[in-house]
Length: 408
Image (cartoon, rainbow, N blue to C red; front, side):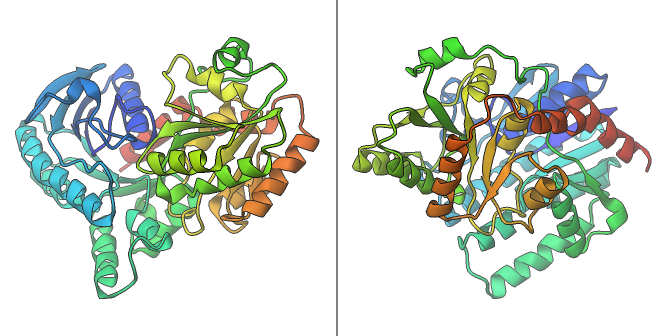
């Protein structure tokens, strides 16, 4: 089976969509598929082209594992805002069109395009029409819904038109897949035939990230004592998370010498967060960069409590992928989401898997942290680990997906 993966993010990006696209390509090639990828030079989450690619201009062909990859040039804003993001996405849509043209002779069985962004959809549909490939739009984020939900753009004539275009484009794909049940329902609401919508969740590497991983040496390396309670946020440092609340909670706990807040990651909002932390002079907060693959399990296991922070309006337009590894390590998590979201549904169906906190409420988040610290369980969260093994194993997820598209 031949797969053409088409999206702006790919390996070696360590977080977000690039991580999952790269792991998907690796799994497919390991299981006998030929994989081609049209993608950009890696830049996420730092919003800066990765060091090893900075002096390369134009297009570049390379092998990532056994996947044949064409890298396309694009504009990467150092301080992204709504207009700069649009220019960023449009630049890749334009340059990647020519890369697709180079691969017309490949004639894949499937072209798999990842949203964000919708800007790539017309080229993918045209490619599918010319080559006869099945077209799949995979939705990691509903980008328009996220922007509207977070107030990044205002409702108006243009956004109403954009919603109609979004629904029309989605309906033209052979399949639309997405990562949560509520996002599946949203695809149907946008006009996609229910029979064409596939549940295709993100996964966790349950063999690499697990509860028995050794972490004490890594904890000491980070400068922590054995008795320190580590409260961790790991992932993208973007504006849509509302990570300022972590700094405010850390300020509330500044007199608790045994409670340490750790923020690991990079992103467009990183400088602002560090400036805020500096202004608050927090003795109990530390920033660290994204950790390499080999150290990541120890980082996840080291945390006594994980924070998954989102603003109001984001919880059902996207599903935080960082949660999967928290579940895989059997971690205890506080998640800012309402009861009527997908995350709320999962918590009701699997009581004890994590705890929900009202979004954008520093007081509620601080109270939940305090409650956890006063009654902190010493063992791992077996409910979380069991969920990861049963539902998030990559072999199960990928095999179900391939079976679904082969049926048609």
